[in-house]
Image (cartoon, rainbow, N blue to C red; front, side):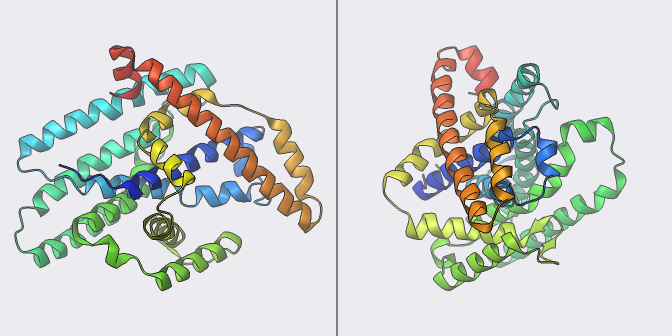
Length: 335
């Protein structure tokens, strides 16, 4: 039986808040394309969030999955069947609903599809790793196998030419990009004591590197889709939530929403509120002096944080309503 890790619940809550904020910020501008092509100054907060929020989410998912052990192939397939119903049904149903509701790209819930692919891939590898009784040999084989899988996923990019399936559903790019973080989370859960991994000096180094990389483009810090910037941010988040932030109102809030992350992720796109006046005002501010840039950054932080918290509460209310119907709960929430 899985052990409930409260600091992981809080970290999941923080991660899902970042996910919602990462969508709220572009809703303040004309379109996502306008945001991605914009100079980084008006959207610095968005750039910071997007540099690590999904790697953090995938790392947590892999970390929790690392607690799973399969004693037989049958148990593996039973588990994956349950995961398929929980992830693929909402991916398909809600993807169609969001496309009908808001327009845009088809089946936009790439995280659900990618997570299921990662569970299948890493799950079957972990099943064979567990057959190796010698711990040292198991770790060596696991490192070699996961590294080889990452290498294959990156090398296989050369065999794709941008087909409609590849472009529309993003099934392969996200699998390649997120495998390393998911596998790392699973490996740490299986073999490393988190307490020994936490070190104040390491935290300081990681925090310094992350802060510098947010304002300066540091070359040669990515390898096979794994970003050192994302890794250092993940370590800092782990350290803060395991060592520093263990109680208080904010932590209790993160724990509460951290237990409903899948529900919030699925439903938050239905509550998108577009307020382009805010984006226009921010652009006006950043064109002024440095003090006005700081004002714009803080204003965007407070605005996106407040709106994201409202959307999250709406998601939780909507989830309670949806769960009154077993059919709707299964089709929309995978429960």
